Each structure stands twice: as structure tokens, then as C-alpha cells.
Image (cartoon, rainbow, N blue to C red):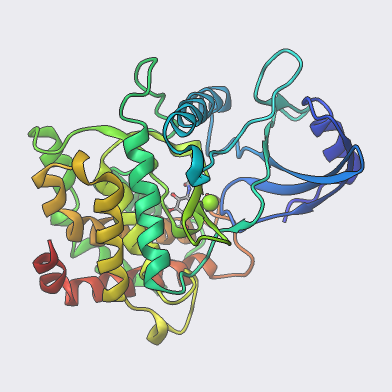
Length: 365
Ligand code: GN1
Ligand code: MG
């Protein structure tokens, strides 16, 4: 966990316009990439919370452009909410700004920070508890895609180019195997084989896109179940989080990552693989929720590929965890040794479970 003094945090947050006095900051959330804190303020005698995040500059090399995307996306969604959802209590992340109207500040180390209004009475689930939650998660991410179809101002910046280019991700795994900087490749031969034997299908979505049968959209690209807040009161999806990878993409990337994360009854790094499986009832709820949220947007070709997308994105993210393990854990944060390997194995177990239920999944559409 980030090791920051309260004084350092105060010096960052006090550069944003906040009408209150900073009291304390605590580390917050389970993200693998950025550093996140929940801040408490006293504002006229009332306690208020804000979220402060340091953007990981190794991962996002152009943070100002990332923030421009986030600013545009949140402003547009706020506009949509005000237009349409006034009574339904929907929210979007709201950025704090500096006196010169920037939604970020840089510290002396060249790190970029941003702050949001903290969304109260809602939570993000690491593991979903029931099909209602799965429905609402998928409905929420589906609505998010729909809200962004008419985003003004031109194409969004690609914050991480080729983020969901699965063949390229497999290429990166190969490079990691070749370099083998930690001498770990031999011990994971089975996992490497698992990926390589599925290599032929890895480019299918990109191929369909190039042929013109699947359109480019504005997608979230990191639709892990814990990247959406569920309202404590209504159980509805309230607010989409983690907007750094919102950029041009395929709708199927988003649906695929929901299948990966929302149908797994175990944590992403669970080592007891007997607990890891694709729960079909959760998948069914995801399909229903996603069609409810984004339905009229999707083409027949997109709908047809929903089951495959679940398999592909799960394989891709497993492949990234495995590559990072071989590279010495330089990308995803770890709390214990071998955590990235455990994450990779967990994803591959999910892939196998998806494969064994593929026919059933296809018959649903
Ligand atoms: C990272 O930031 P976080 O933890 O929501 C990663 C995703 C992975 C995910 C795996 C920018 O997401 O791509 O799917 O971990 N984000 C980035 O849990 O690489
Ligand atoms: Mg996250």
C-alpha cells in the first residue's frame, strides 16, 4: 500500500477547490494499478468524503490526456443523467478542480493526482453475491456504453494502445518467456501451453471488426465487477468507476470482462481452484442485464459473440497476469509472492469452465 504521510496528502488535496478542512486520509479499494485514498473533510461542521487517486505513470504515460478523456466522459454522463434519470438516483464520478480549472495536479515527482466526490451509500463488490447484482452490473455497464454513443468532441484518446489486442498480449507473454528475467518460465510450462494452444482463436474479434461486422464504440475496457458501485438501498448500479481506460473499443471487451469477473464465485487470486467456476445462472443474468442496458445498440454479430467474448477476455487477462509473473511483477500490484501466478491460474480455470459450458451459453442467445 502506498506509503504517504498525511502532510503529503494534504498538500495535494489543498490544491483542489474544496470548501472544508482536511482531517485524515486512509488507503481505499483494491485496484491493481493506481493508488487510491479516501479523505475525510470537515465542512461547516459536517463530515464529507472525497476520493484521491495517484495515476500510475508507468501504466498511463500521458495522464493529462487520460484526464481529458475522464473529464469529457463524466461531463457527458452528468448531462445525460440530468436529462433523463432525474428521479432514478444515478450518478457519475464528479471531478474536483483547481482554481485554474484543471481536474488534476502534479506533485514534485511528476505524478498526476485527481480527486472525486466520494459516492456514499454504495459499494463495489469483489465477488458478486447473487444474480440480481449480476443483472445490475451488466445493465449499468451496458447503459454506460449507450450514454457515450453521442459523446461530442471527436475520438477519445487511446490511453493504452492495443489494450485488448489479444494476439499482441500473447506476443508480450512470449517476450516474457524468452527474457525469463526471474527464471520462472520452466515452472509454468503447463500454463504457457494452456495459452498457446488457444492462440488460433485469439484474433477473432479483431478480425470481425476489421471485416466490418463489429463496430468500434466507446467502451470502458475494465468492466471488472468491482468497477461499478451498487446502491446499498435499491441494489441498482449507481456509478461506473475506474474511467482511465474508457476509449475506443469493442462492446464485447466489456461484456467479456464482466463474464470473467462477475460469474466467478471466488476471488480473482483464489488458490483453491475447486472454488473457481463460471456460474451459469450469473452468466444468464449478465446477458439479460446487458441486453437491458445496451440492447438496442447491439448488432446481431455482437450478440452472437457474447459467449466467445467471455472466454477470450478471461484468457487475455490470465495471459497478462502470467506475463507479469514472468517479468517479476512489475505491472499489477501484489501483496504476496506468486499472487500473479495464482491470478493467472484462476483465470485459466475460468476459461476451462467457460469452454465446458460453451454450447449452453450459445443456446441462450
Ligand atoms: C487492472 O485497475 P484495476 O484493478 O481495476 C487492469 C485491468 C485488469 C484488472 C485485473 C489499466 O484493473 O486491465 O483486467 O486489473 N487495469 C489496467 O483485475 O491494466
Ligand atoms: Mg478498479
